[in-house]
Length: 329
Image 1 (cartoon, rainbow, N blue to C red):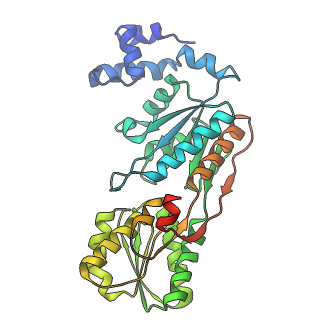
Image 2: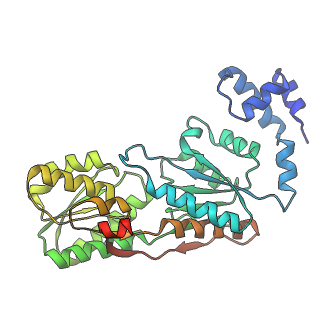
Image 3: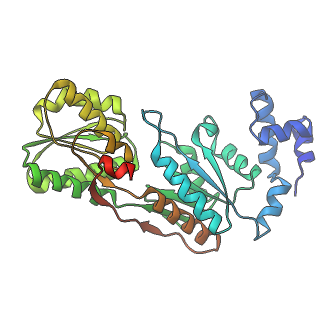
């Protein structure tokens, strides 16, 4: 097995430089970084600490990779609930978890990300918010680089599990509820990001419901952005009877726009964040239990680490209304 000294000799640098490259230090030139990474690849180098960790059943470290959506204008309650659930359940199961935000990995190739996780002694990865555009992680998944648990993306394999609510059914249920209650001729539907797994699933549920009830659907991507939801509402609300949003933040944006326009339209959201309780407007929503979803993700990653095959786990959803009293109790 190659050593860090072998890598340093092959790359023509010092051992400390190899260590800095492996730990993604920023003060390394691209030319030097490339020489080191090429040497790592050629020699199939794995840090000694990783090799010993992989050979020890007592050391189980899991990366919690959180993909950041910079379009959100509010504190990300959803990701905080994910992390609380994961950390608390991991403690019960004697797993060590390390939180990694996607911005830390920007600009890295799949092989660089893999080596970065190897340097951190990671043995399995949970992904929160993976989109179809995250090509490097899709490459890692396809290469079976680690056991993966993916939250909110229906990907399965021998060492891949997923945990999610049934987003198509949940959005269908919400849309049917709004149609039956308000009898609209046209629904404005504000979808999430293009190329997002949950966006496609929720949009399908909205389409299915409107086709079933013979209601016109006017759908637009608003990127889970409160600001974009405001703009879309200003543009399309006059021609719609109901506004259905694929996230609560977009619903809050739609309500803000309606108040500015001085018109009323029934609005519903999706997620069930507590921020809805502070809005003086009747907004129903699809409630997801993000804490429980993450507990299930930790259970799934432990199952993979114990050698069990990947599985799909569906977590229940509910249609609720969050009031101010719910928030303060």
